[in-house]
Length: 383
Image (cartoon, rainbow, N blue to C red; front, side, top):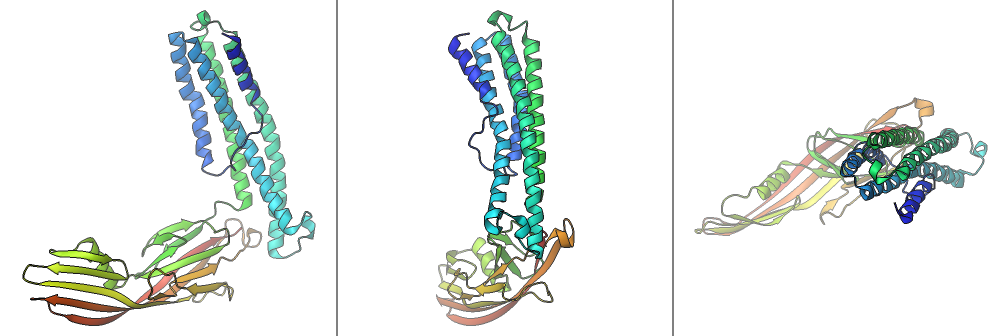
């Protein structure tokens, strides 16, 4: 093996344990870690076995060098978790001050102080585990590379089983590393109050709700994350008989009909039978909503407002903005949730105009409809 190749292998080993740029560890990264561990244990083993059978020394070197890079990528996750904890602790100190004893005795201050101290303790555990696991992984990788560097090409077949066994041990150490960081990440998330989305269920029979961009038709459920500004924006869309009719006709126009305009607020189509022609238009002339939290004393006054979304010029007050209140596990218990019941009442005025010739005469009508939107179930988790 040439000296440049040896130098590249040694450099790869020295990379272990060094901090590198990495994004904050989030839940989605855990699958990535699992996949990395499985690849090191399974995929790399298969590639090594193939290289050994082929007595292809260069291929074996390429595989081991690539493996070192993968191990480094996994090892960076511990450093990312430490940085995530430091970011949260730093944000709390900038917001409230460096001395948690001076944060006051309000319920929120007490909860924040407990979270702060737990995060500080969690950082110590994470740093200790990182140092132990990184050293173990670094030594395991060195042992593996030492074996590879000491081999001669003619010894590859004879030493094949020992090579794979050493690589298997390295894969096991990687999986232990992955398990450690996963456990610490889960604990950090629990302390931080993460992964506790707002749970929603639409119990209204005649209104669809669009909550922070997530649509819930009658009967549907969904989870949405707590927004950074804690403002939940709910848009209502009354599903009255006329609205259902024009939406269905837009999807399945009748014979000889051509759709010219189609939306939940306006529908226009033309008919040409040969003997008669006509244009029909359904249009919302006024649509408005009233909002309330009926019978719920836990909703603070002044923490909500309604506005028009602008989806259609004649639609008013179809958006309700609500500041999601905080409450704390220290008082209500771990895993506690508080339910809120949001109701709305919608009214729609429609105009119907048909202009035709032949057998299709002119016709104009007006129609008013109402929709009861009781209601949207909102379940907020304690922090």
